[in-house]
Length: 312
Image (cartoon, rainbow, N blue to C red):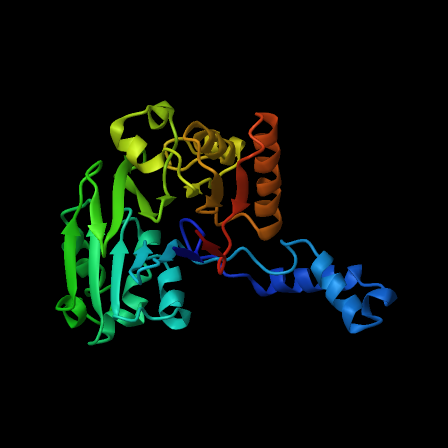
């Protein structure tokens, strides 16, 4: 399967401001020496030497992750503002069929849905899966007056809703899927998608606690021995204490969780909107240091960046 991050930010979209862009340009210019521009090769080496937080950006769109399976099935996880970008820049599935899995209905996870071009395309079919029976009513109310000009009726005929249950596996286009309830205000659900012996887990919006480490059959099905997990790691430790019961986790708790479930690779996800690129990469370095400190050097630790593609 091929996994692509279209939205990685939590809570609210956070585009780079003009001042932030100017600061990046200034920082790059100040690093340039004469030898760095002496030739095309020198310029390329200089660009390659720049810190990741400076050359590029983590991204400001709210959660949306696309999975293209080897058999051609298209699965999309969550409908944050990244879904709009997927609709504009992604490759439409050959059969014009999208399968959308929703973790929950907080605003940052469905605000991209009305702006997803595919829902207005009469040739497209969309199946929406969630653990919430009220999903049709919630999405319809989002696209109603006074919130949105185009009513849900314009796309409703092409959409089929499915209610799933935690711990009960189901299949999408022959792809096994299982979900698990997480600790989050109003509840949120993680999804495990498996294909050809590989497992990807999408675990956004969770305030990790002791019960999330309990090895119930439901959690084992979703988390145990996963190859890759995109995991809520919104806060530093200090901020996690300040925002107890807000429903999100500190990065070190995410590392502990991934280690506990023997997950091979973790992508820090659902980034705090007030953290800039430099701070997010400092959190990445701290998370990598922590994984070494607790002697789990085999686990790979990454930061989820818009446009990143994982081939699994």
